[in-house]
Length: 115
Length: 110
Image (cartoon, rainbow over all chains, first blue to last red; front, side, top):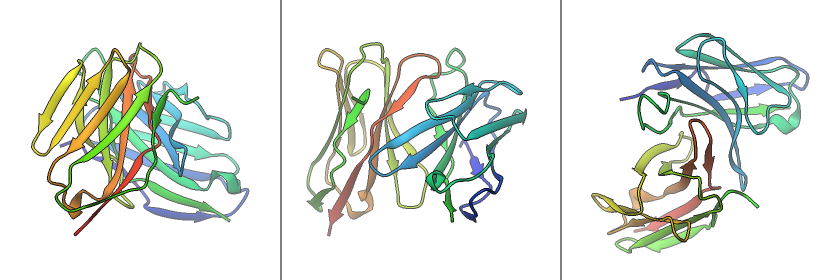
């Protein structure tokens, strides 16, 4: 079974802090994704990465950056946290489309509160 | 307009009922369709995954895709309280472009 592990289940930070959310997958997947999930809005893609050191902006990248130094690890960074970034953050991974038709597998999420 | 539309509910049914969850999508380029189940305080887990039009069955769950009308459905037979969760539909149209519905919250009452 694919295992996607997010380092924190709950996190409380203050406005202006730099926040790091970590995600690790154990299936050697090339593709990794960061989403945020808000009531009524569903899942929105922040950033994705299709290889080490590669990244692509999703639909809502503003206020976020990412880092992919190793294949198994994908980090989401809130450069200067703001209250509107309070949300559930979900990490996902999957193989590239040409290698497999597998859809995405998700971690259990990090519920982030910015005070 | 969102590319994948899903009625957020909530939907409440008695145990044993047949549940029908539905989504529509706007772009015919979507090729693969999924249903995820998400329990409270957990990440989405894949339930069903299909490519072609028609039905795919897995136990009490049936996924249905109608590409001509851009309509996807999930049916749950003999629903159980343990089926209470939020159900998300999703569609993929190229290598990495995956779109989700907003999710329907389902409660199955004993």
